[in-house]
Length: 561
Image 1 (cartoon, helix red, strand yellow):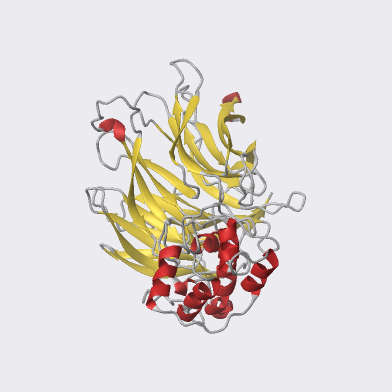
Image 2 (cartoon, rainbow, N blue to C red):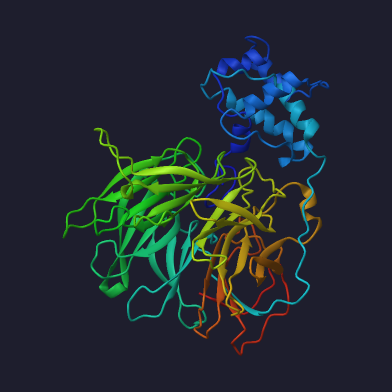
């Protein structure tokens, strides 16, 4: 997201334009482009003026592509419709002028603009994915759960997690709300039991369960953004929620602060010393952000105490997911890094590998790129660990659909399966197109012993281009695995692209898999007070099933609290 629009985990303002002409030189260079030391007014006139037709020879094209691709892939002209490129290139040159680098030779503004305008389509063409030729094997009843506004503040659910907080208790659905600042627990299907507040933080984005202090009780660790909008600041935090009074209350303890916007945190014992460390995605914005490990250095019997190590200095990391990918007995982690990188990066724990004998500090993790998106506007925003093909190794389920950074949707948005082929090699399989794709999760909904997939979409209230609205807009899709490695699509909901969170679980314990979606509508919105929808699977239930595709914000049974 960015500072112009709202969101959970998306890039800073103008990142597309910044990286279009990225890694720029000094401010004076722009004025040289404008005419060898021209005044600020002269440069402004150059940037705002319509240009005459420009002929681009091979040498000029090579110079444009070399400049625009200096430290990442060259932005693809078909990422935007033709009319949008003047604004994108203009902002790129403006940001270029402020960057401070002086080692590049920028093309003239007119040449770069002409290059993109000549190669861009008049309009973007959006794919129309084929629906399955048969009805879905499962049906759902949808329960709408709303929450009262508090001082006019509408909910923005950023994460859902189905957790058992106490050994003798039933699991609960934990809901983080990044706009209202709450971490809450609710019991799906129990309209007589109101949700309970676990903690009031700043902008909680993600929550995970663990036993951080080794006392046998279930703790929670929370990634706290520090601002709803994407800003460069030091207000991000990692918060430990320690249970008190038998789990009826939680004490918030800050274990890391003074950093950029913290997007994700996961507990793992990376050094195998018997306590839990934390890997943290500090998304930041434009100038802040990194991937870091908080090493638990407390002595036995002491409360957790952490020392940070930055393992990647780049901003824009969305998820960090621990797993022993190289099967050496030490946990590694995979990170989804957005911004100009659009990269799935594997960080291999070096503790299980031979270390050099020379006297310099041991490298904790070695970074290896597993996959990179084809374009800077690919919009990476979701990653899950799952063995999609049931071959015994961990694959990656990856979504791209960010439209919050520039207000444009992209035909490349969708759901991918990164298949683990061994030897730390992954191959990408496109599963479906889904504009605004935000989260995808896998589970066996139809109980046929293979994994199906549900994916949800999250978009700003209004996006460009206008022709995106010419047809219904899928907001929840169900991908049925009909044969090994073969998926067919069933659209479950349309025109309600406000879901930034998804959780699969058997909420009612009837033996089939249900799912929940959270609401993160941007104001104003008719779905403003809707909080969570529960999609009850009717495969083994006596509930009445919902008829076909749910259209827009039509109300279903719901409870208010």
